[in-house]
Amino acid sequence: MVSVARSQRVHSIVGGGTYLRMDAGNRMMSATEVTELSYRRGERSATSEPVAIALERLQTTTWLRYLQGRGALTGTFEDQLLRIGLADRVNEAVMPYRAAVLLFADEPGSLLATDGSRADVRVMVYDGKQALAGATPNFRKPPKTVRGPLIDQIDATVRLVLDNLAEGVTLSSSGFKTVHAYPERVVKEAIVNAIVHRDYRLNRDVFIRIFDDRIEVESPGAFPGNITPSNISKAGTKARNPLLALNLREFPVAPNLDAGEGVRMMFSEMALADLYPPQYRQSTDAAVETVTVTLFNAKRPSAWDEGKRSFDYVIA
Image (cartoon, rainbow, N blue to C red; front, side, top):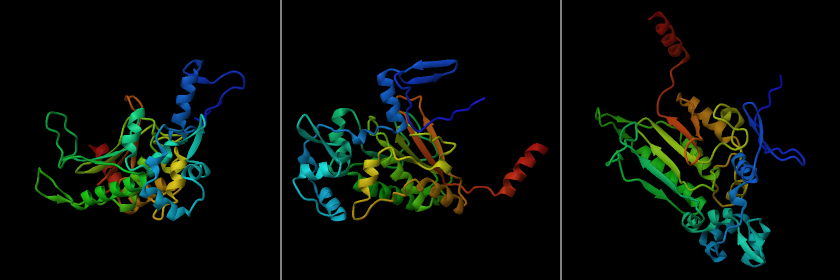
C-alpha cells in the first residue's frame, strides 16, 4: 500500500493534463481549475500580477521611505520598478504588480477594489465571548478599519490591537476586570502573517475579533502548500506572497518577518506563558475560504491537573 501526501505543488502528467484525485478514481481538471489550484497551493500569487493602476499613484512618501532603507535607484520611476521586479511591460506599457500597489499606494484597498479584491483590516471588539447576531451587535466599541500601505497597515493594526488589550476587559456579568496575558510577540506575529500571507485575489478583508477570553485573527485564503492545522506547529508557514515579504524587509523599520520560524515562536511563547497553544482552523465551505488563528486568554492546566481531571471523570 502506497500513501501519497498532499504536495506543495501542482503536478501534471506530461502531455496528459492534470488530474484531481477522487474517492474511487481520478478526474481531469479544466484549465480554470488548474489555475485556481495553483493559487490555493501558493504556486501562483496575485501579488505577482500586473494591475491597471497609474504609476504616479505609487510615487508616495512610502516609496521614499522604502528607498531610504533599500538605497537609491537610478533611472526613471518606471525603470526602478522594473529593475526590482515590481512591474512588467504589458503591450508596451509599464504596469505595476499588485505587490507594488500594496506596498506603496496611500490607499491600496480602494485602488484594488475596482478588480474585486480587498486589502484592508477590520478590528472588532466584542462584549462577551460570542458575536451575537441581531439588529444591535454586541460591540464594546465601534469597529475600526485600518487602511494604508502594508508597512503602515501592519504597524497601525498592531498598535490598535495592543491598545485594546492593554485596557483590559470588565466582565459585564461580574464587574471584575480581566487582563489579557498574550505575549506581545505572538499577537504581532499573528497579525503580520494574516496581512502578508493572505490571498489578495479575494474580496474580503482581514478580520481581527477581540472577545473577553480570546483573539481571533481571520485571513482570507486557504493554507498554501502542504500546510494544515495539524502540522503548522512543526511545518511553520509558507510564503504565499514572496514579493511582499521580500520588499517589506527593505524598509528602514521592517515588520517581524521570521522566514517560517514565526509560527513555531508563537507556540513556544504561548507555552512559556502557560497559555493554551494557538488554535488554527481552515474554513473551505464558505463563499470565501479563510484561515483563522485563535489565541485563548486562559492558563493551560498542568499535566497533573489534566491527568487528575481524566481520573476523576473515569471514577465518576
